Length: 487
Image 1 (spheres, rainbow, N blue to C red):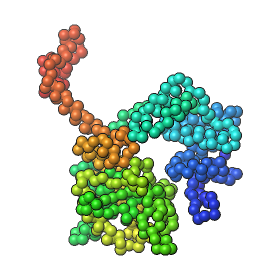
Image 2: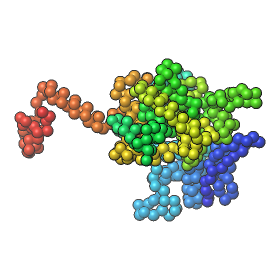
Image 3: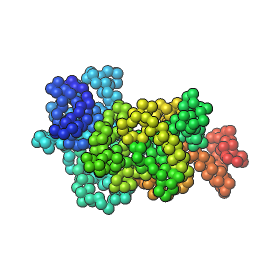
């Protein structure tokens, strides 16, 4: 079936509210069941894009192999196998014309689960049979399901609210299509931004070309990009989160007025500022989605397409208030004082621009600043101080949050407090930001080896005593002074 994917605006009633979703267009028009499903699920746009990708792949596979299967369940089972293996034969050809490469196990699992749920929804609506029905789990599968449930249960604070009876029933079910189990990977520590170069980056990298000698700090420095970088390196925010900040969200800290009190609100559910007045001159009490739509004709930035300049992602963080915001916790704490001083200079400069929106970080024309533009500015700043911009080196914007995590870990901050600083929902979530990298682990093992050698009570192995004189002809491991032994 020939098809293409487009971005569509859907009006569901006579109001002015619309919803943008990805739509698959076929020869017969939009794939209506998928449209209805996406509208009913009301999930994030990235989730809907992945859902649409899976449906598109299944349509392509069905079109290329429609004559091979009489049973839809068998078709789906083989489709999942081809997601794993790809469709190219050993001779380099693919008679189906798909020429798929094999996907990662995590992506196959995500697509398969989404398609299975979509099929369940269609079956319930239309009274048909799902393509990946539930069946009674084997004893082995039931034990695995229970193990997975307990693993999740033991990592959350509100585990006592979980329905154990419901989990027991769910553990007895399994999907007909068996998915490969992901291997356990002990990830190497993610690279952090070089801690001894962060101030060089801020005050030597983010300079305004041609203004290096200006006596005015707001002219000499790119304060906007400095503030965003400080929020990630000293405040631990993800790269996308500063782009949701309003000008209203930074105030002097009530406990320490010299520091900045930064609150990052949920893009749509967060409490709106009180500067939108009704007909009687009273502030309109609403959430930020209603505020953006009603006052500025905009949507929350996480609701735009990922290719749109206004897009900024949002993860399901643990929020600090029923007003749906999270605090920025500065570390070291003096960084909050520096941020406050620079923020005042930046806001004075922003006030000179014509901005028809509340977002804090803007372009020279007063439009909301984009993540792509910041990444380019960050790359140039890194190069100005003589570093190579690369995620593997920790010199991309992603390295700053990891620097924050390692700094907290080095300071031996309690794991519970560390979780709060990162706004994570479970203790294990911050492991990727704090686990030791290979260099630190090697150094620790070298130090431990030195301690072991200093307290050694057993002699090193002497292979000659075992009659294997040809095993170590150079005496590297045996003899009175083994060469590989630390001195």
